[in-house]
Image (tube, rainbow, N blue to C red; front, side, top):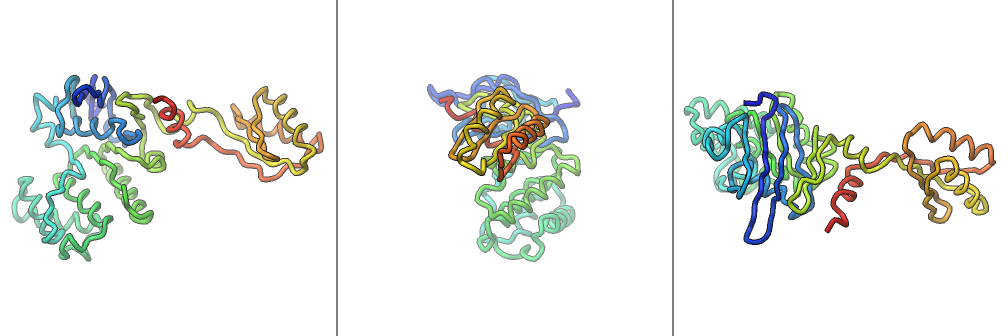
Length: 311
């Protein structure tokens, strides 16, 4: 067993008829990290997640959970993780507390332990006030928190979250982020699929970008941003008659192409230290500028760079 890794994915492949949904994907997830699976709709991230969690059989390749093969030791591997979204069978007509009691019993807890665990989870997920209301009266955010609570009954060391905040309002999303951070602080390893780039940026230690079933890139958010390109400098030249001179001056300073939109100029810096000489040169040439911004690349830029135009 490799102690460093919670999950080892090797050459995972899935075909649906002639379509290859996941194409020879390999990566490892370290213990104690939040690992993000990012990709456009239909890219293969959910199919990958379903194979990792034994809900779907792979055509080729293997997955190990804490060193246990998910095919050869399926029951043992499954006992080591929780998965949100798998509990669509929660009963709408009974309360959150009753649902938690039922799933605790199904997970092998005694009656007394089930009662205690349900109480703990209701408190942890801010559901105490709504504990005895029927689920059909729950908001989307409350349902999502209950889903997560159910998946944590057995305190698994590994948690799979498949798009945990889709459709939630900003306030509830922020609450879910706080909950996920708490789980990591308590030592959990989390695999997160998301369509929200800011979510991956905020939560993930490392991100795997999947497109057309293939692993396109893997790295920390900072590493991925660095690969896209440098920092962008934007500013407006105050006088129209000085725009051409400003373009020439900046292009000469940086030996780079300057984009012009009316009086607004933008150029990519390889290093932020290049900013001061540019401002000094503009000042010496008596070219007045305003609305200066220095913009780091975002995960949106990474996503567009890695997935758009690759069709």
